[in-house]
Length: 77
Image (cartoon, rainbow, N blue to C red):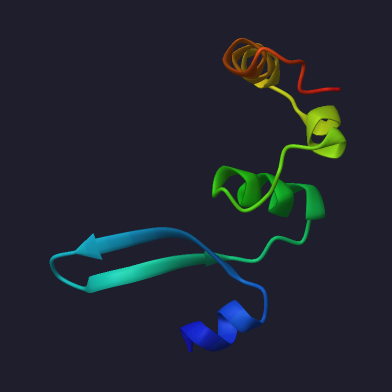
């Protein structure tokens, strides 16, 4: 069942282990392409690009500053 869902485009977002029920996976299907791209970026599967930078909110300014300090370059260029 899990393989069929993964082939259908579901992604593993969490794993839980409970003493009473055992292991379980939390799956999610991303209908929004931007959310899927952010998920892939967080998992190391995608690159930070212009579209992700433009859609960034919340702590995005902090992330950009950290990237600038770490690489010595502006990630927008």
